[in-house]
Image (cartoon, rainbow, N blue to C red; front, side):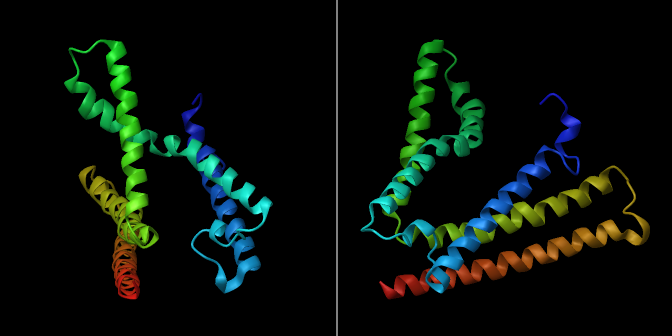
Length: 197
């Protein structure tokens, strides 16, 4: 990026990207709910009729988009695994062999995730469980706790009346509530689905 300062400005790259993404998700969800109401399923593609050619084309295009966007979504974790763990053990290999092994490694990881999606029943409930547990901890609890630790370590003021500390503690409490309630609800849904099978 040419101008890193613009990344986190109020109308910077990060905020504009997040707002546009949230709007697209909200509009898509709203349109799906307006069309299907309470019969809306976890993915709108599950509501599309099976007997219409246009519906099949939409599903095919959706699969095409996922197929080509999946490597982009997986790029960071695969790059971290490759650079920090696997590549270090390949010092004696030539560059060509390293490249071949890297491609094979990336394909194996994709095949493993594909196998999980194929084999695990009620994958949507498992994803919901991971989302409830990980999103609250990684997105709310840990950032607030790290913020407190950084300010304490650098001996920076917590603001007038300690409002920054109060805000961070409130976020941690809220995150714990969300994590526990979401995890409990997801586990109950999993048991209900298993009992129904």
